[in-house]
Image 1 (cartoon, rainbow, N blue to C red):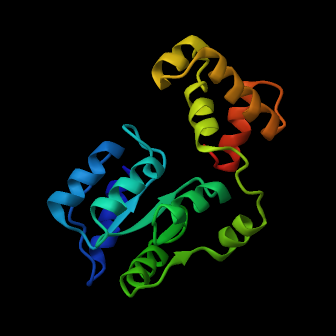
Image 2: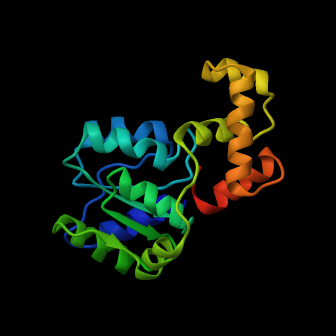
Length: 190
């Protein structure tokens, strides 16, 4: 409903036209390939792959399409990950559509758009202490998946999974892997 409302409001703008809408992360890259938009507005929290997970593939496959993350998750870690993966903007959903439309125009003019308060928070926030593998193992363990299952899924030994989890727990200052995942998620590191 929110996506449809946003599309309707953007279509009212005389110089903007919404060419496609998708509701899943795994539908984004194929939709961009089919419709060739100048700008893709991508949410983070999507079924079928988060916007942050899809972003590297999207920017690599379609560098001509500028990506703006539009999300409810104003987290410094998410901003850093999005910008590192090639996003040209990062906005929060509760802003007025007029700001979104103006931001799209700015990105089309070659600018990068990030809300100033979020950019400041990102500069002040601690950087991600977790390695890529620690993030991957921590993410795989988020729902209580047994170590043996994580090891099989990631093609690691059980001891290696335990080592990564232990390291992630230590780096986040958590008491267990569930708390470590929650802290890492709060910071936008996973």
